[in-house]
Length: 227
Image: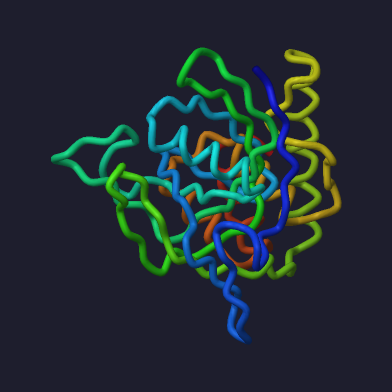
């Protein structure tokens, strides 16, 4: 069984609910999926979902055309353990479900796309173990980067994309369109592709400034002779 979801921005009738105030928008009941990975805006994240709490979450999100939140695990495990609670990092990324297949009864294969970053203000644990948070949506990146560094980072990304396309045609690890002239998009895709430790990826994703992300990635690639 296969279904394709049409993402929709959360609004007054969507779940999770969006608080309409003059302050930054707040999601009041955002279902969370803590993982040992970092999702970036416009990133592509495939997931195999088998725990009942997350299968139910995926079905609810698809029914309501609503996102869920992906957070890197700060401590604990992806799989529920009664003696080891899962603690998420405080900055995560909304994930839209763009495709869903049922591999077998009770096992879902979903493709998700990163959307907007959020700051987790608080969360509770439901009886089924699902984490549900109150989150403040973060604004888009500040775009202020050095054109020379951006150009060199872009050249590396184009080279990597070319190699990946030659090896696996049609199976690139991120979604189209390719925003080659967008510093945030370029920096985020390099952060996904480079072998950077998860904690470092989390720090990079949480930065408010695309220029800072470009500078750090450029320095990493220079130190590791990738440029």
